[in-house]
Amino acid sequence: MAAPYDVIIIGSGPGGYVAAIRAAQLGLKTAVVEKSHLGGICLNWGCIPTKALLRSAEVYHYFEHAKDYGLSAEKIGFDMAAITKRSRGVSAQLNQGVGGLLKKNKVDVIWGSAEITAPGKLTVKASDNPPKGALGGGDYEAKNIIVATGARPRALPGIEPDKKQIWTYFEAMVPDSLPKSLLVMGSGAIGIEFASFYRTMGSEVTVVEVLPQILPVEDEEIAAHARKRFEKQGIKILTGAKVTKVVKAANSVTATIETSDGKTQEISAEKLISAVGVVGNIESLGLEKLGVKTDRGCVVIDGIGKTNVPGIWAIGDVAGPPMLAHKAEHEGVIAVEAIAGQHPHLMDKAKIPGCTYCNPQIASVGLTEKKAKEAGYDVRVGKFPFIGNGKAIALGEPEGLVKTVFDKKTGQLLGAHLVGAEVTELIQGFVIAMNLETTEEELINAVFPHPTLSETMHESVLSAYGRAIHI
Image (cartoon, rainbow, N blue to C red):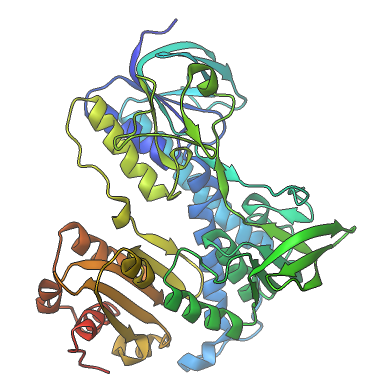
């Protein structure tokens, strides 16, 4: 048996590899167990490659609208295989980067599938294609074991993905060709991003959402703005509707859609993307035998990542929502700092930003207007449209909205919600403000550079207090 580690992390996704690096920085003898891809789902099959696909779609969109910018472009087209190849190349580059970072920080990589056999002990069954220098299968010991195994697409009974007609995000990322028509089941970030990509590239796209609004976690006003933009692009959207049955043919699927008023209709498409959420990878880890508490497919943890079993920790998607890479990274840092005897700053989930990288982009942090009112706050709400912003007009991106929600009593920023060009890059300004407990007065007195899209943020704050200048 190998010498005991201070920390072994099962899974090398954003949560796992960041936790490993931070543990090594703190002087802990550290290893990660990975069975297939360094960097996990996010880097290899999620966040990163989808952004590469969406970038290709964005550039293609600008080619199609060259005249709007006084330019000309002829014989516009695309090669789906080349687009996919570029996406995979981006992932491969970052995959190698993660390997380099782990090596630089002297983190051991154990290649295989892990099962925790007792607190502090695990057995690894070797996997194929180990990277150079990786350790193989066997028995390992660690004072602390962190479960960072992520999540996988949720499958609905009777509509299980078959990788041919019914896709998950895995298949949607590497299409052999562009489907002429596509049905997307679910309008969260994953569903909407793929709907946006395929519609921009020319597919006929229909989105079906069981809840009354698309992008259910977003502010109602922001979601409504986004819906209008999507529908203007030609995406068909059915809300308050669910897929009750799917019949597959050789080259198509026909779905029966039932709406909330009991009406039904059939929609046929070449492919169906199932984007109805994800479920934690908690199986085959030995958690049940050890009595580790789980709830609705996720491991239950306290504020620093501890489970109910001493020495076993969990972070990231497997530890529950919000299932976001940046949340996983911070949970990993918090857990290993606690293991190292430090007193980490606990994460406030109300201050975790969410981003959707469709066209238009959507970004938010904190409470929506509705949630703030439900929580008992007397609120001030500010709004500012992109049409009042010089940079947005110059960019040819005049459609967008920034909305801010304040506590009328204290001036506390409770939430910020954005839709429009590059808002995923703007949201961090509000995140920092909330972390610093910034008041409306400090935001109003801050000097924003001109001309920038960030001025919309300033104007939204001014609007909440009846002081907006440019509208």
